[in-house]
Image (tube, rainbow, N blue to C red; front, side, top):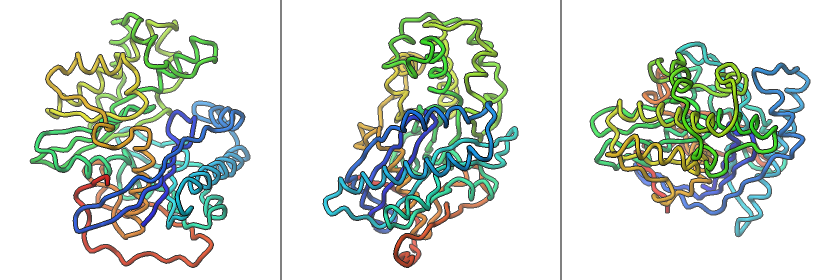
Length: 384
């Protein structure tokens, strides 16, 4: 089955897309990556999207308009990706959309909202679309996050050591796979979210991120500020747990830090290092496979190596999975699992009471035809 995966993450800057051919053979699900793309949001649309995010106030009218315009942008990204395929054909699209609010009340996730109306994708491509991927897990008592945990567990399942997948996006999350225990996954705190906000403030809006972590690396850590940031109650919550820019945003940064500049960036990079490292040490992790934009930040990566000298730190690219395509490929995998009647989340990772099939399906131009439900759930993922 050929599936297109689409997602825009917590940086709100582009739509990542990947197309892959999936096969399920017994307990092994394999994929051949055929094409990938990154489509930036139009500047005006991104500006309106960012302006509508918490803690800002918005209107139902603007939410409706954003849902439509983001849906059209996703449809355009899917159509463009199809042109990169030899025959221009696919069986299914899986779309995560754009998260604009993730409702967490202490240890409990209450709801989540992703914009990017999938009907526009189905109409433009003629393909059925699996969308609204998180809420079914939340309805079953989970956090609907980290969605990547299903991909991570299948990818790392063959490890004889305690291994962790680390995603350094806007928010950092880990998936820990242990030979003698159930896997566990959760958000550890901010990765790029506060760093990006600090860069915008330091450059009066001219630069949205610290390229390569150059400024973070040359700044000096403010230990007193770091201690204040580490007192954030979220870090003390038991797993599974999730968070987002509803908490870690520019207003949060202004409330905790009085100045901007390289020292603040260095301190925020150190915050990510410390909050991630504490959790990896907690679980006795021996190998870490990192992905996400934060892997390009030398202050974070060097900081993790220094903080965890006995831990093997690699990137997902070294396993043959292009880092820039991982999240879109993960969304495509979830779409494939849904189409085959298989659960797309692991209860021990999300906190759900049971494993559930994720998403809602919007039919394409033809009558909806799904394959017979698979008899066996996969336990391993391989990239062909």
